[in-house]
Image (cartoon, rainbow, N blue to C red; front, side, top):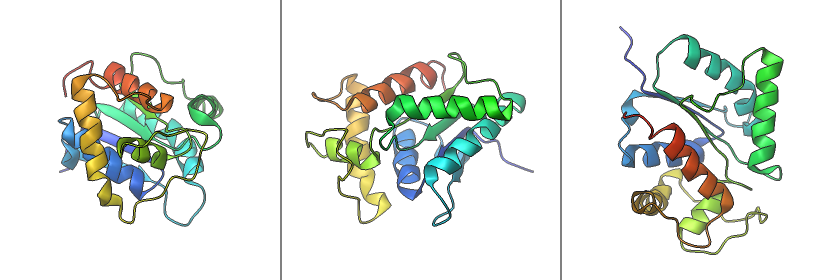
Length: 183
């Protein structure tokens, strides 16, 4: 007997998974009921894996009510959030899948540059999203302090100024797509 999946996480790598899993857990999601799809390490670009897998996961999310939400986390690199969202839409059209609709519980989080930009901001640094070389964490799980800070700001309803625009967009996406209904 298979267990009911509450949430599907589609992401590029282990750092994305650690960050998303910890954040969602701190916001009340049951992460033991999460199915994670992440790019296999060392076998191509994580962005490409997410982009190619997104239409499939969106179709499954719509046709089989196995999950309450689909969450996507991918780096914006030099394209930024808008460029990545356009690529996801294009991937859907090419696969014959309707693009995600505003009312769907499908949240896409895209840090401009990469996740390390958000981690640096959550460490108290002033960040520039065009800068792509913020330091990586030694261990993925070391992001817990960053997640705690983000959860604190989310509960207060305000990010510290100046916040990275991509993180502001992610917070709005979280509120509009995942908090709208109880989980």
